[in-house]
Length: 457
Image (cartoon, rainbow, N blue to C red):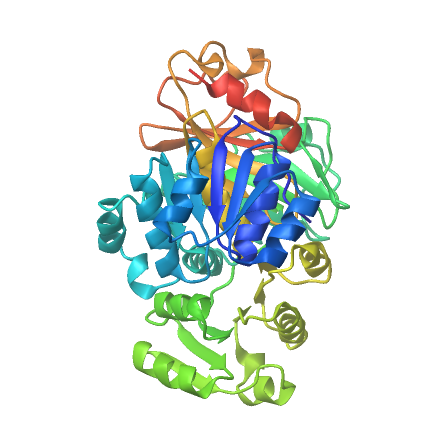
């Protein structure tokens, strides 16, 4: 389902390119009443955007100085250059910065663009940020394979606090119990439930709310709270030693590279030339040339003996289908790259452990640049119309004036915890936020603008 966010502050945003990500973000930001202009050489795409979205379009080449001068007659707060070709994005940002755009973000797939040195080099030329959807997705996969019992996980401040998504099993000790009852049974908990996803609806849980089988529970946890959290959710972490990755594109290659020294990795791709390149790039990975859609290939390569299976081919249906086959063969952990947002809910309901979506992952990175409050990080959650923010509390903001239980905090939002002096602290009613605290907030769209207001100086 499309991600819905409520406007924080109206911005003038220029989006260049005709990639799927450019289309997705232009519709997303225009629907939230930002002043969006799209520049592209794809006339048909521009017609579709004009017909379905309240935004401005301009036909032309974003790497042309003359064309950009014409478009940038009004002041733009933000440029998102999202061409498929990363080099076009860098050039577009360099020119736009010279023409007065305040902040420029370029999408890139190139290997060298992933390094810190390259990003610093780009900043010198006016490219404020370089974002790689593939690198973001790969990081999510690696993190999930390190936390095997979680369906989704996102770290704040280098893991001082983590947001975890756990599907509650039938035998989970918390089934049928309310938050108040759980708190009484356990004197000290290093985690806090911030949302329940049930029957395609998101619930901000209060003390009397009870957990049910198959609930997707979103929980903010300190590192030491994770084992107990998983135990109460009926989950038991297991060790991953052998993993199969389907798809040797950028995500598959980055994931294999990150894991091959600690795990036994097998990577399958149907392109012969790519496999030869991968064999040279990956020194400890078994690279196999084969069509993963052929079930005999999966059986021949001993998928049944794998601890985890990651499907990141360019075909969503293939990723979903092969993950289901892997589950049937007894693979404990399955992760699928699902590019069609409409398929996310279905994929979760039929038993695939984790869904990765590049559009949502990149939106998580970009959305914070459209806010007025200072936001360190954001996370657009998969399959649920909600988001998690990491705000920095300002001296004159509303959130530092009273304890949490006396703040008029929106009903559709909840504070999960704070990071103070490098240490994660789970939120409680008597806690008072201080200037400089990093505050982790889970919120539904109806509360976004109210939260932003409370964190403004």
